Length: 217
Image (cartoon, rainbow, N blue to C red):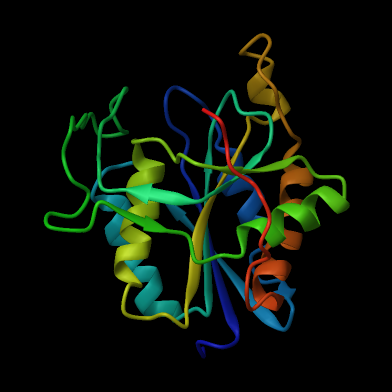
């Protein structure tokens, strides 16, 4: 595989008592497909501090991708959240799938306070809106395993500026939301289609557009 022809998409295993994780369901549906001349490779990450980064780094070495988008579930959110920033903090509200619950620990000892996504997140948001998909630029990826992976991804690629990377959170699937009354959801098939478009835009947009996409709080 060459760095100019492969995209790595990752999703997560179920966690927090859920039986499925739509992030993996959505990205696995794209495995083996081609987007903008690039072959998509999907990998499932464990919801485990530390082990998730080991799996991710192994996949980066194996696949040598030109683009990486990690995807995770954010139950309660109503839109696809294109994450802007990963912070160097593990602070788990709930244990991971092995019972680890780090509090106020760094993702990477001695690492910078934060890394920014290198994806064209504003252009991606605009394309998603134009196609009828709900999407937002998010200013926080939380402090659980999703942020852990996002930060670890950007740290691993810090010297490989030609490889663009970032993180997208997605809502519950309808099957999950049925067990969480009032929670918003998006069908897995819709998420898959949105991720296909977002990936295409990321591959075809050399520089992000300049427009407001911030938040008041």
